Length: 362
Ligand SMILES: NC(=O)c1ccc[n+]([C@@H]2O[C@H](COP(=O)([O-])OP(=O)(O)OC[C@H]3O[C@@H](n4cnc5c(N)ncnc54)[C@H](O)[C@@H]3O)[C@@H](O)[C@H]2O)c1
Image 1 (cartoon, rainbow, N blue to C red):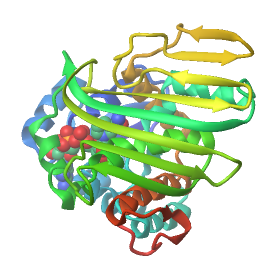
Image 2 (cartoon, rainbow, N blue to C red):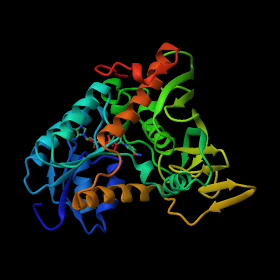
Image 3 (cartoon, rainbow, N blue to C red):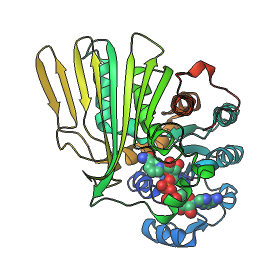
């Protein structure tokens, strides 16, 4: 370690990086030491806001700075693979924003680089660090609902009331399929949903996607109904995405929200909020044996999941442990997303085991 506290650099200091910075406000393990962003306005604004004096236009200069122990890569999707490989080769610990990358072939390159390095690599997916999902996972693992049987997930993309709008930068690369991968409801926001499904219920074996408008389209779908079978147990899942631009969503962040329901042999658990607060009800509800329990005393602000997720990363470096998501688990989540895209393209059920491991790309 180059200093007593780890020195972290952000590669990409755009819109979501503002929430990543919360992890370094009161972090005994690490400080935010440098940023790299190609946009001069972003560099100036974030440098001043975060009190970070070291700012580069070229991320390679940040990677060449021996004072930096670890990096958070918070870049458009097409850069996830090359910058991760360069960062590991430069001897930095890496936290890579979701989605891991854009194809299974790319994921394999990251797995090989992570396995060949003595540095920590993880994919940053903030829903797994969100307290209501943590509680739901704990309740399920403790057997509170018996053996989990079915998962239902809903994501609404509407219009935020008082929240964020996407910045020009963030919109531009997302609307370019080469840079984002397209299929945003499945590969961009959807990576969170696939991650949570996998986290709560295990790996997915097969996927079928229905969408409207019908057929293959990289432009945002109005609706998708994605159904899937889990590899273990008699477990099925469904995941509905709805784009309703006039629907008002109470949120401090993006104009979207989601909720999840898991039914087991003895009970049901609901997580009723995350990015937004459309329902305005307690974040976690548990039903079992005729009793309904509601859990309200949780940190439900979405920003806390970024603070906690970032602090998990730096603590794990200090402790020498591996936080979620390691490269192999991150690839399993990506495979679920890519299978949903392939099924949308072909109109047929996709078996994850039959995805082309070399090339599969949205
Ligand atoms: N819930 C979440 O965890 C969440 C939410 C939003 C975005 N994200 C993810 O975060 C990442 C960034 O998304 P965003 O919305 O903040 O985008 P953004 O466009 O606001 O930020 C990306 C930044 O990268 C910079 N950049 C682009 N190419 C560069 C290069 N070659 N060298 C240096 N800087 C470069 C841009 O100038 C920009 O400031 C994506 O992976 C996205 O999926 C995650």
